[in-house]
Image (cartoon, rainbow, N blue to C red; front, top):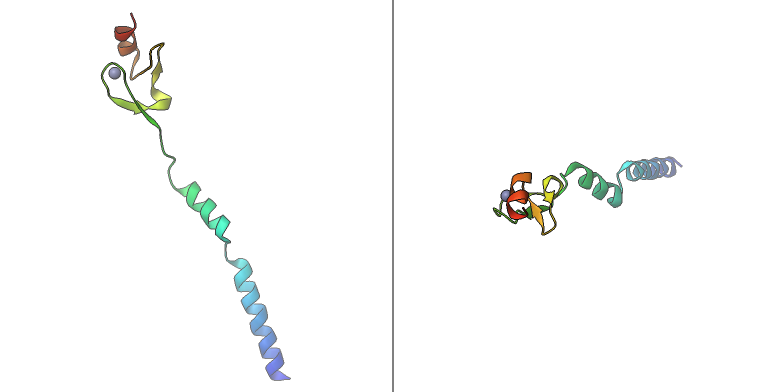
Length: 75
Ligand SMILES: [Zn+2]
């Protein structure tokens, strides 16, 4: 009888331990949240300097690093 109770307690303990562990999908999600997002870089048509896509200036012929270079390339 004591052995059965001991076995039951161990089973409940293992079940609690396993249910508190993060699942693989939670682990992957936490890794994705903690790592910085990749920033897409584009080259300027005028000077070839690479800038982040969000900072690039859109012209009719392409993307530029700044307004000056867009005006130089597209007068
Ligand atoms: Zn430029």
